[in-house]
Amino acid sequence: MIAAQSILLVEDDEKLASLLQSYFSNFGFDVQSLTSGEHAVKHITTHAPSLVILDLMLPHQDGLSICRKVREQYSGIILMLTASGDDMDQVAALEIGADDFVQKPIQPRVLLARVKNLLRRQESTQQHPTDTATSGKEKTFGCLWLNNSLQRCKLNDELVPLTPAEFSLLWHLVEHSEQPRSRDQLLKSLRNIEYDGFDRSIDNKISQIRKKLNDDSSRPQGIITVRGKGYMFVPDFW
Image 1: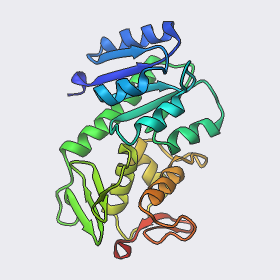
Image 2: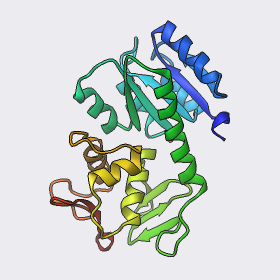
Image 3: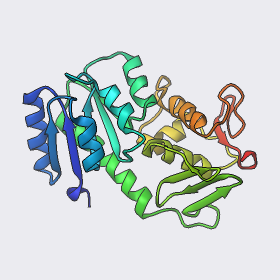
Image 4: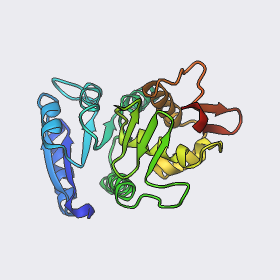
């Protein structure tokens, strides 16, 4: 159940950290907090919390550096907090493996809703994989293998270090093989929000998936762009 989930809060604003820790604890979460980035990498990789709420600007080590360092070892959810309205910060966070971001000033109820949604989506993916004949929990396309229950992906028998959000996006494309999926459809699947015409998170994650799957970004053939329609997974390529 979500109430049993653990959260690590990495936030240097002690007043805000105390407020959020108390707020989330009241909803049954097991919350631990750090007020600097100094020991965050070790804590995340050692304790593997269900979700990390990670501030972008931290003393000793910033949130982007922490996210980048833990991503290949940590398969949980990372939600970034940013006080900046700069789209580049948000793009950078998503590109290096953050699953979502929330801009300050923070409304605890909004943050709680975002956290619950992320955990619910991951829990649903792990515990209730689609069991239809065309969309089972495990799929193989040539040298590409995916397991939805384990959220694992292998290419040529080598494990591909996809983030939870990247795997969910790839799985959605795989479930709709040879069908173009629009940014709106993919964004609703990934973050349960509507596409506003400006959000580039889907494009950034597609770029990362292509890179990790060795699908040439300049001339992709496994996950192609269908002009005016969106992105499409091509099963025969693999």
